[in-house]
Length: 406
Image (cartoon, rainbow, N blue to C red):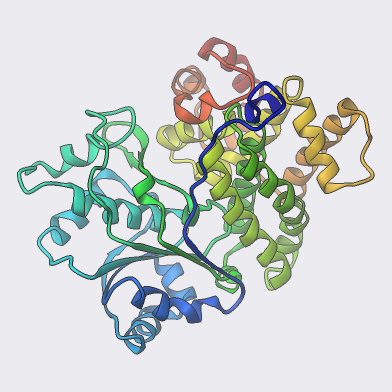
């Protein structure tokens, strides 16, 4: 897959790389929230999950920290799961009537809270006064549904504070929005949605339960692996993945065994941040393409779906991505075989062992999928993620692969 990053003549092809202009990383960095927001504006709209808000000091603590920096804050939305079109419409209906001068959106929580914050930051400035049907206005700006309208106006500045270590949403340019009524999960995507600042404090993940730790950690690892072997992989993300993946793979079992292991939590938070930058600039692959459809069909948690699909994804791509998988194994184990084939095989085995060791779901039935829906799943596992998969897969080719892990 190295050809994806070269110009064919041994040089490096043209590419772009986008990430938050300010990244504050490390235990205790939540103390920088007030000054970071104040540098961008004088008022804050807080979008947060209940657990995320509690991890960051509670609503009172967050408000006090912002007030100490001269920022007046209002909690405008509570994220209680993956954001839906209806969730976004509900917040927009309120906030479109509010003055926006000097407003900074502060998103605190897991990927769902940060995605909801991104959607509000981007749409509240882009939806025009003449767009009275807010449901249509939101859908028309999502990929693959509606009219595919791009965001044309600058978004409100957004400060992302992740309190899980998985999605890397603090470093991406998209917000994933679902619609149970219509049966889709799609992205609102624009460079305008990249957060202006990411405050990544691993201490905020210490209260994550085992299930969240496993699902988020394997989502992060899946993103690191899939972005590295993606057909659209780029040089900077690949270099970052080689640095971050060994630490994340070592850290996940330790964080599961000891939830208070801050070193492990720090490695996972770093891996998640890098995975966000990597996927935003290089794309993903089969595991994420199928995971999105699983979320639509049976409400499977995204991280859990990725956990079930990562082992089969690396096996499916083993032949085409042999050299890249070997490079990942050597980054983890400098004593790995020098020959690509055995090293790639060792990496596939490593992923299978890791998923089993942390108790990740291994079968589609474990995620709530009915047997008679495997055909639907194969037919609807497409989108941008699947386009990046090293091995092109039609629905007919995907069907027996999914049936084998039912």
